[in-house]
Structure formats: C-alpha cells, structure tokens
Image (tube, rainbow, N blue to C red; front, side, top):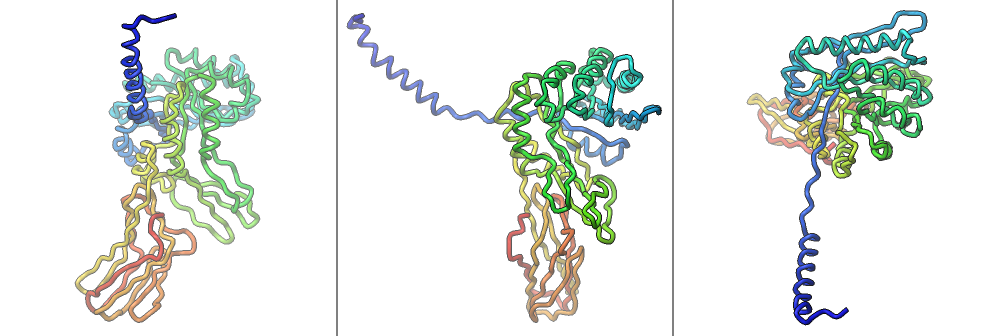
Length: 432
C-alpha cells in the first residue's frame, strides 16, 4: 500500500506527538498511596474515664469502633457462662463513628446444628446485643463473631454463621478468621456465610523455653496470609496488634501464665519473665505495604486494641498514630540536668520521639567549679565515682526503664556545695 504525498508530510508530526506523549507518561509523578481505613477494637469489659478520653483523642483517626459486648463459654452439662461488657453507649454515640459489636466465644467442640441449644443461645445473645445498642440510639454497623474454630470445624461452624446472619439481618455479619483457615477448601465455603471477615494475623504461640524467640506478628507470614486472602475475592480487614504480654516461667522453664493489662507483677524466687510487644516499626512497614498494594477486597486495618495510658504493655498513642500513617516511629531520648540554686542537680531522662525510649548504656557526668558532696541513683540506676570530678550512672542489668513518648524519668541526683558547671554524656546514641 502506497500513501499519498500529503499523508507522508504528516507522519513526522504524528511520530513526534507520540514521542511527546510517551515522555509525558513516563515522567508523570507517581501519586501517593491512598490511606487505609483504620478501625479499632475496644475490648475492655468495664469502661473507665481513661478509655473514654482515649476514644475522644483518637476518634479523628478511626473509621469505626468494634466494641466487645460479651464473652461466652459453653461447658458440658452446664449452662453457658456469659461475661457481659458494659459499654458506655453515650460515649460511643457521641464519638460520631460507626459502631460494631463483638461476641467472643471460647473454644467449643460442637456440634453446630441449628436446633442445638448452643446455637439458639448465640442467636438470642446477638439479638439482645443489637437491641441494647438501638435502645441507646445506636444503629449497629455490624456484628462480629470471634470464634477460633479448629480448621476441621469450619464446615460445621458455617451452620452457626448462616443461622446468625439470617437472625440479625439486615445488620452485616463479620467473622474473625485465622491464617491457617486459608489453606482449607472449607474456608472458601465458610467465607460467603458472612458479609466480610477479619483476618487476624497476630497471635501468641507459647514458647517451649524462656529463651526461645517469639513474636506477636511476623510481617512476612502476615503478608503471605494477606495475599492468600486477597485471592479469595471476599471483603476482608486485617487485624494488627498494638498490645504486649509478659510471660512467666518457673525454674523448670514451664509457662506459669501471662499478664497484659492491669497492675505490674513482680517475679519471685527463680521465676523468669519474658516480655513480648507488637513491634511498631515492623507494623508500620506492613501498613505501608498494604497501602501500596491496595488489594481490591481489602477494606482496611482493624487494630487490637485501642491503646490506653494505663495499659503499660500497649503502644503509646503517638506511636500508634505514626504506625497508622505507615511511618516507622523513632525513639528520641534526651538527658536533662535540672539545677537548683543550692547545688542540687537532678538527672532526668526524657522521651521526645514517637516510639518508646530505653536507656541501656551508662551516663557519665563531669563537673567543675564546685565541691562534690553526695549522689544517688534512682529507678534502678546505680552510682559509681570513677574520678575526682566524674561520676557514672549505671542502668539496671534487668527491667530497663521504658519511657513512652512524652514521659520523663528521674534517674539520679548529685549534691554540690554550689551550682557546678556540669555535663552529661552517653558513649552510644540514645535512640532506642
């Protein structure tokens, strides 16, 4: 085919236009990832002022609250045991956020048939939960059923979900799913029985010895589970942790128990204590990965659980907010020397970053133009005089003080006959 001369004159122009378009496309700036929706569980049975205040401070970052309503345990030849939570419905309503309610069911061997009394109990409890919320002017956004079924139970468990979904309609039903379920064909049959599911990629496996490494959430394992879930093309959220635990072992390395919220416990005798916390840097990386992947079926992240100031093993709110943005929080630790006119010097550790600060190196103090009188360490720190005008504050060998962002701690004091010229130094960075 031969083109006429006039057409040939336009070919260079067309070619140049295509090149220009190609260059424009190749240099088009990459758009930032769309932020994920973030929800949070409120899992406390009793509501405190601290919980209400934490809700208010964080509601701007949260798309939905999922609130514990009740925990159920079925026992052989006995009535079901129910521990009901006492939500503050007014605080929930005033938060201006959608509110879901959760029922937690302890391990149960089945059966799950519709005619069983256990099934009827779950259906009635679900109806009562939704009715209570409506009585206070809250239309529930969903009902969560949290039951860690064994994989072999999934086909039976489906009967519960089908009956429950019918009983609470039109309120959406959400089930909690474990990563191990994704490998079973039964889960593909189970998932459509709910409107969506929460993939819980955090868990705590009991270590065989106190020295064995363990974690609450392995990011690489979590990614593999999320990719599997996305292939099912069913709406889901990913549950990530904010919490921590202490594990207690006896002299024979046997697990004695776990502690999380509540007052601090102390080890006695030959008891060993291991602490495990959700790693905020790893979780920020996982959030960033989710933001960039943007799986079609993913509806966001739901955090277990809302951090509270009185929960000493949970993240600080500043840490949590940084992680929700996909930004790894950094520890910024500062030493302050606070002097008085009569020669007293306080040594203060201060956490200024978005992550907890831990000081595990000695602090060296040098002074001049004053006569040293006395000194002492606090918060587990000990004092040693290493030169006429030099002193060292040594951190404790165990139970290092951990400061949440914004906190400060007095770790020692020195007394002089008059205000000295004094400086504090740490041989390694204070960024942990």
